[in-house]
Length: 318
Image (cartoon, rainbow, N blue to C red; front, side):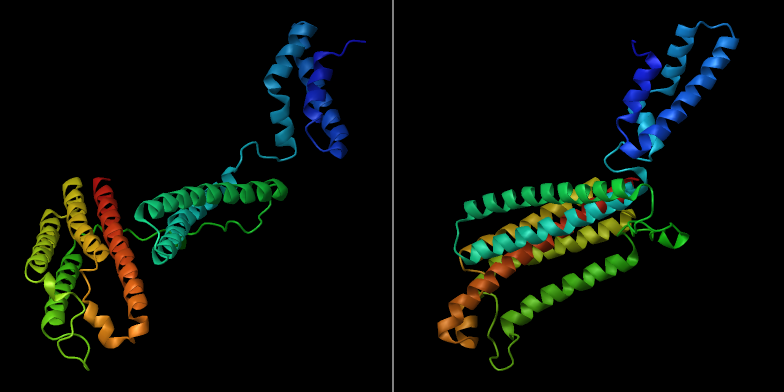
């Protein structure tokens, strides 16, 4: 005997659910289909047309079966989506940066060439991003499918206390004062280091190479003054813009690139600083480590300041 459309539909639906639930689903479907067929027959529709109409309205049998056993058909369902996405963004913001820093620092201390360091760091960052996305998504997908709609602690009930604070635009008076004070302290520290030094037992011993005076230091003071003017312009405008964010990037690059170049040539930090304070057998190692950390710190600070300016400009546009 040939199978009817109803038989084929029920077979397609039940084969995608656990075996112990198949008889219950099959019986339920036959009852629903029979009730709707009777209603259509009473309205004068032929048996064949009524059957096709009822089954078409029921839709894809696998989707119907998934709804019957509460199995999500998406990788991450709406119940866990926001928690998954927030965690993923947090991990992507932290882990790749830490991995890149660790690899770059180790390779730099090992004396690897710059090209090799850059290539390896990019490979590590990309690999880390992919692995974080894959494994985080896999864990959420597995847990969600086994939870069957139950709360497994991935998310809590939302309350008003969860509302985030409104982020500052970075154009207020407090931000202006903080920026100007910070720039003044930085300029003062450079002057103090050159003329007095920061080591009480060795007055006049400077951290930065004396050869940086006057031209390199003058250029740095010009950049500091430009940064101060930029802060004043942002305050006067009342918000960040694409132009001020771009200017901020230019200023950061104008400071970071010369610093890194001088570090690579060993001309930023005074060599006598280490030979005076550190035993001779470890002075070179300490100088190398501090130079590397200074370079990474410069890149991190400049990068973060650029990103911060871009984010503030985006918030202002919204």
